[in-house]
Length: 190
Image (cartoon, rainbow, N blue to C red; front, side, top):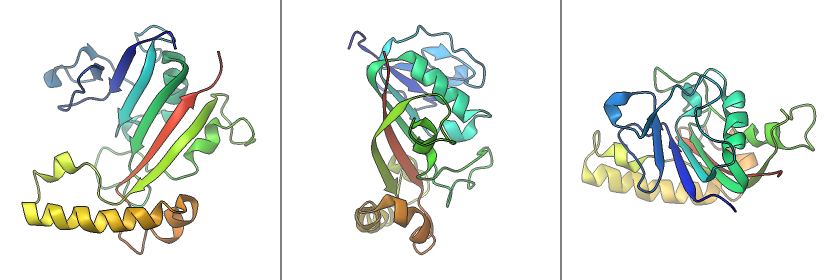
């Protein structure tokens, strides 16, 4: 890999050390202010070995176009970690435009015509999370509640991630929905 930079998109008030932190709001103090709905992004191609996009794509008008742009920014073999709300809980925030499902990676798999969008990514890992974003829970829940949610979440996550393709649909409504689905993609191509 010829790059050594890491990118954190939509950092908000949670910048990641060692990353170029990007946000639309100057108030959050990012390294770069950028509207992620405007393409191309003002960053060099094939520059980043890792891109983190935690709870960003659900706010964008064109997430598939954003994925194409993230592919451009990653160096070959680079990793893209996308965390988004699962469809079963995706619309709990007033600014969310969509929720996501385990089918999202099909749009980046060349063998999955007619869904393939022309942006080749290899899915390295998919993970459902019942209790996500623990750093935000401190604002709304006490210590005991947070611990109980964590413990229950560990059990639910372990079961659900045995077969995410099945449990994403079948199991999600039995447990009140999943808060998050995480995809780790690897950039294909040279």
